[in-house]
Amino acid sequence: MKYYVADSYKHMTRVGEPIKKNGKLYTVVEGTCDRCGGTGIFACRVENGHPVPHPAYGGVCLQCGGEGKIQKTVRLYTETQHAAAQRAKETARVRREKQAEERRKERQATAFTRWLERNGFDEDGYTYLIFGNTYPIKDELKAAGCKFSQELKWHGPAAVDVPEDCYVERIHWSDVYSWNADAFDMWRTEEGNKFLDDIFSKNTLGQYVGEVGERLRNIPVIFEKVITFEGKYGTAQVYRFNYEGAQLSWFTEVHKDLEEGAEYTLSGTVKEHKVYGNVKTTYLNRCIIK
Ligand SMILES: [Zn+2]
Image 1 (cartoon, rainbow, N blue to C red):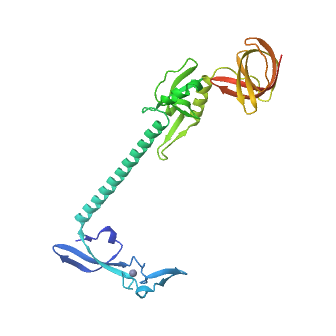
Image 2 (cartoon, protein in one colour; image 1 turned 90 degrees about the vertical axis):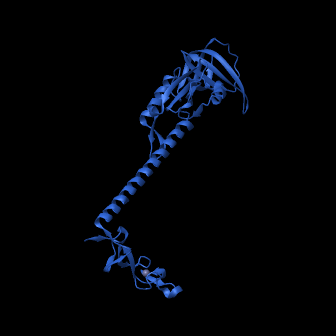
Image 3 (cartoon, rainbow, N blue to C red; image 1 turned 60 degrees about the vertical axis):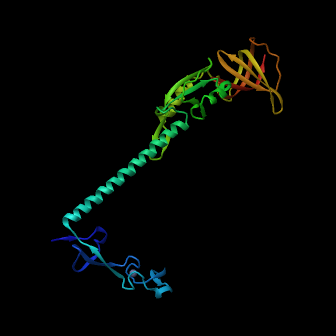
């Protein structure tokens, strides 16, 4: 009959005949000492590949007594017992792996839910983007649990009542992001970038005029209004004009007496194109108004 030792002693050599004790079989196994690696030396360090004996205990390995080999008396199993032990071991391994996988999935699910919550999405993964002139209602948005981010601007997990110059659109996280479960993180996708570009330009009013750096010469504009504020170097004002439906703004410290609703001829250099509120605004400098 063939007998087996436990896997951990498989690599060792059996010595002598099996021993019977209390109805169980044992054998003596012999193998290289795992503490000294077979050298028999209790080393304090290794020099040029050779162990240097430690001054304590005469430098003799405590486990093998300097023999370099160890012997152990271990159980012997029948083929049936051995196979059952192997199966039990395999079952335990599978169970451990399954539990680890479940814990990993749980952690990922938690990370995902937290991401949604932290980033202003509801539990189904939706958020309401708020476009338009949001500045005047920013405190109300904040109070309603909305968040502001560079990517999504103002948005929140629940629909909010907004004034007429604002609009709300519901989007799903998967419109913009891809969830990388292994990294526990969201990535903005190429499609997501395009989706955001489209949705923001769709919800922005007006048109830009000219190119940055271009000199607009003698264009007919209607003066809409002036906003005066205290700047770094005294009083400054922003004059706002309408040119064929496009919004133009001029920041200046120069004071002009202009009549609201009246037509003027304007020359100016395009400094910047920027969305103000929800309106594409062309910012000018070096303006001459006639
Ligand atoms: Zn040893």
